[in-house]
Image (cartoon, rainbow, N blue to C red; front, side, top):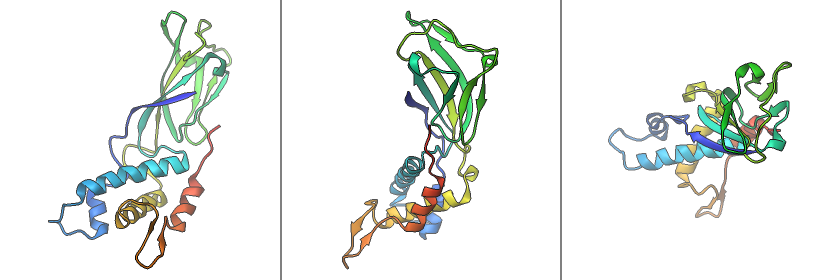
Length: 196
């Protein structure tokens, strides 16, 4: 199984204006706006990686070899919003779009594609990259779609990364280590999923 992101999120979970507000920036101080925007993106990637979830709507392709194509295909894109298409490839590289009447899709937290009782996959598929599934995953198109505690973690980690200048763990003048606060770690742990 090979995953490829084809359409990145069109927005981030938090807005620059909101980040500036809770960082306490005056309206005329814009020197660090680019840095804050970069940190928001890094924090989203970090949260997605730690939780194995896609936060904001994004499109991915899942490529399967012939041996991976079974009656029930589990997808590691959580939460799954929809399947746009399933296309198979034969040995000559010709494609067949699988009609959606051949399968059903379970979206959300436990995503999978299940072959319908009367459905079938095309029989003339090549051995490698035999099926390409186009999926849309994420809670929604804007940060307002996310659970509030995940938004709070993203806000807090952005502030944390800004105050430590994005170094994650850093030794201070007093010799104390600054690392990611345990409350944030615990919240992320509660959202972590392990795709099948």
